[in-house]
Length: 181
Image (cartoon, rainbow, N blue to C red; front, top):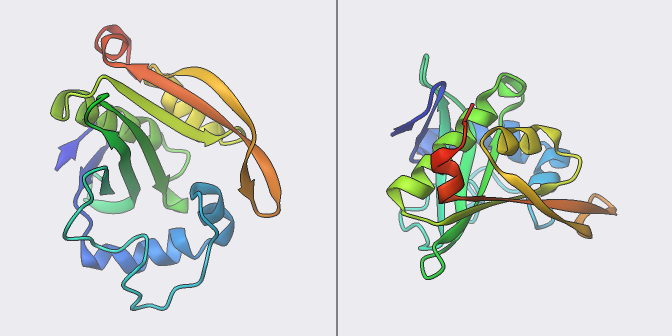
C-alpha cells in the first residue's frame, strides 16, 4: 500500500465494490460529473462495471481504492490514467465517498498520487483535468503545486449542459522543490 499522511492507496478488493457502487456510482449527479461518459444503471453482478476489480490492469491506467489510515476504512477511489511511457506523463483522478469529503483527504490523495507518479513510475509530468466548478479538486491540486494551464471552454457535457474544464499541470522538478501541504 502507498501511504500519505492520512490516507493509503491500495488495490481494489471485491468487497469494496458494493460500497463504491452504492455511494459513488449510484449517485448519478456526482458520477456524471466525475466521468467522461454518460451514467447508466448497472446490475449488482455487472462484470463491466467501471469499479470492478480488474486482474489485468491496462498498461495506461491504474485504479486504487483509497483508505483512511486510521482504521483502514474505505473512503474512495483514485486513478493514474492516460499513462504515456514515451513522454513520461499521466493524468490523476479521485472520488471520495460523501462522508469523507471536506476533511483534507483529497489533498493527501493527490500528494500520494504525485509520489507514485514521480518516484515509483519516474514520470516527468502529471496533469489534472477537472470541471471548472470542482473547487475541492482544484484546491487539492493547487495545494500540491499544480499550476492552472488552461481552460477548455464548454468541453464537458454534464447532465444537460456544457461545462468548462480546467487543466492543471505539475512537472517533477517543480514537485521536488515545491512546498507540499
